[in-house]
Image: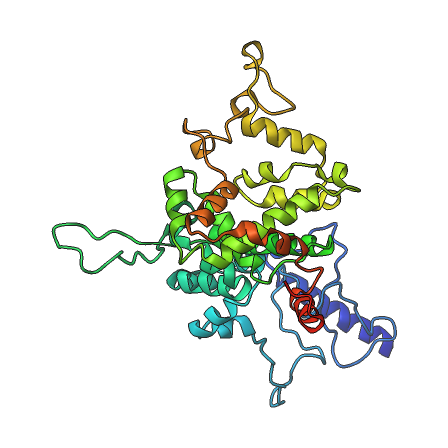
Length: 395
């Protein structure tokens, strides 16, 4: 009898709970979800526990009930304090000076990615974009950032994102012009050139052609001279003894000799391409020189050398001027030897010719040092001269 009474009590509770639901709150007839309703304190042997398919954190939206399960906090019970997640990056954003300092130490790809995905970091960098880009360049490529200054590369700059005026001394009758600041494109260019120059120095040293430590700076100044596409400006740049110093002219001449020795090697000369140095010096950058020095790494072959020559000064016959030569489009054939790399008509003087002319103009008499330049890195001339003095063989 007690068991029947308990079953009747349970059925009554279920009927009351079901009748209290509105028509919109009733579950679907085909739903297999069981009602999450407790049946009282007494445990029935068959209905002691009604399983639920939803967790406490995800209640059934079709019902409005109060959870009285043992896992729910009881009245008067002390709940443990919830630990909130601390975002270190967002905390650092509150200190713009620290964010700028961190940005100067990031790699270029990481800096650009963070600038693109974080709105707060984007705003901090925009307020001090010159400090971020120049500071990052000084950290990763100090020589290149000093040689390839952003003011000489207007196409790699952008208007100031915070619209600072170019100068505050402009008359009131003229509107203030927005200044240009270096962009991430200039930063990428500086870091890339630093890497290329470093690989050229390492490739020459690995081949046994050692040069002075100042070679990296001389190569960067040579690259900047290649960026100038007009003869008048190139000559003026070569005449500037603060930029092209006597040491730079000496090392550049030694580089020319070492390159001739590398490409005219009697054993590997054919594989390296004999006589390739004048063609490499006439390019618009030092990237082809790096590819020629490391042909296996950059897959540089005879076809690439021939294409460089076709672009530089090849003159096709009249019937073939509308045809591509060695894969080079007809509008690019034979244009690299002119000013503006094809935009002008006068022949553009290559940097190696200008170096020789400037050294002769300064009366440096570099021809008397050719032998020393050839043996540089192989023989210590100071020790040789000391030995000669000791044996009385000095001339």
